Image 1: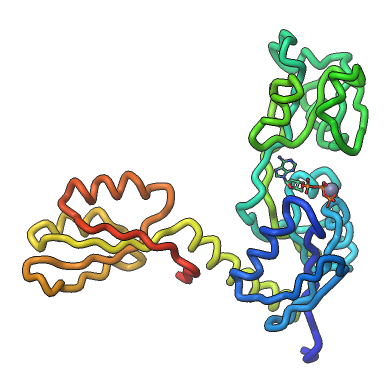
Image 2 (image 1 turned 30 degrees about the vertical axis):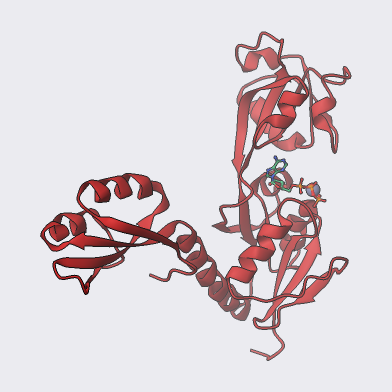
Length: 288
Ligand code: ATP
Ligand code: ZN
């Protein structure tokens, strides 16, 4: 491996994915200087070169091996249908690609769309959905402000990305079908060289540790010794909880890890079982 060999990563130059992509690198311990108008930059402490691109171009650059890997929304990857491989779901920028019609419309099911005009920036995903449901409809591809199309008489329906739904609401639209759920993902070129693959593995190891840490909390609590057994039985921990005696005789301090999805239930059960002084701390990295 030459000492100058670097992994080339493409991320969005500006927009909804930009900051979370940089944040993920930072949490992986990778420092990059993020000059606003730069096309590319290099990490100072990891063999990584970062390219700043429009999100729409990232799948193509990764297919062509201009970049080895990229961070981009699933919606873009599936719309562009390039030959790239999914490495890891990253858990940020959640959204859905949905069909919407004017709020006053009497929409029952997808048959409503037969013979209608649909405005979208995702023509190939919409066409695929229509084909699967055996619907003939006319697709109007537009690159932005899709949500105004019904209001100006350009289309009967739209298909666009939705997160909170507030854009639809302010434009008098209602969401009627979800055709894709999306989040940011890491993609890679299909033919990475071995040294590049090794660098990717190293990066991936860190990403997974960051993801796990985000989904878990470190919990410290005080337990009367006669309740210790019951309290410990409620806690999973990485191996088993850590139990330390307190200066106050008859009491122990218990340390453990709880996952986000069971968190509140467990806290209630722990309190009910006699735990006191419960302290919850974020975890920065988690390697199992
Ligand atoms: P670019 O200038 O890079 O082409 P863009 O305007 O196409 O940017 P953004 O609006 O920044 O893209 O969105 C980037 C990605 O963020 C989307 O492709 C999608 O995966 C994700 N996303 C999450 N929530 C939303 C949302 N409510 N609307 C649009 N995109 C969203
Ligand atoms: Zn874009």
